[in-house]
Amino acid sequence: MMLLQLGQRQTPTLVVSSADVHEKSAIFRVIREEEVAELVNKLREASSNDECVNLSEMLISTSNNVVCKCALGRKYAGGSYDKVKELARNVMVHLMAFTVRDYFPLLGWIDVLSGKIREFKATFRALDALFDQAVAEHLAVKTESDHSKRKDFVDFNRIPCLPLSSQILTSKHF
Image 1 (cartoon, rainbow, N blue to C red):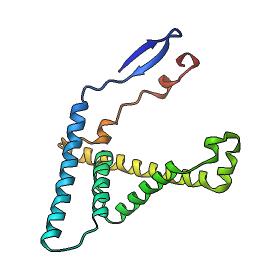
Image 2 (cartoon, one colour):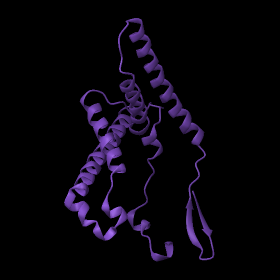
Image 3 (cartoon, rainbow, N blue to C red):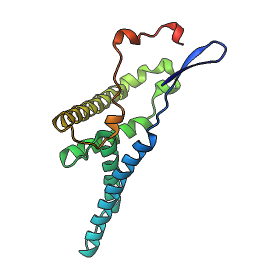
Image 4 (tube, rainbow, N blue to C red):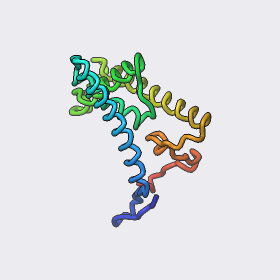
């Protein structure tokens, strides 16, 4: 991590450089290859048994499995998979939703009255709970079995934090 002084006003700019990008992408590549191999095996098995398959559902499931394994450290199945799938769908809907506040900030109260802000906050709380659960599960597994060498996105994004008193920003920082 480096701190650079750029421009005439000497505004501090934080530049983060990671030397282990290749390692991270290699780990995610293994996960992608595993999931695609599993998809191909399912298709091969269904083909040999002359079964009909919903290819769209299988592709969506495979992409969700890749994202969940990379970001959260594990695949979700059964009821928890349905919950994660519904949460991902809600996030996508909210990201594409029209809000009056985006175009007319003074009329943002309309979004509150229409219930969009309440829906956004509920989805955020559910997403936050999912991330907290993933980190807690991750830490529990790491402490139970430290021999696990496989890293995931949670490992890469766990950065030791400084004490809160040393993180105070003043107007000199901007």
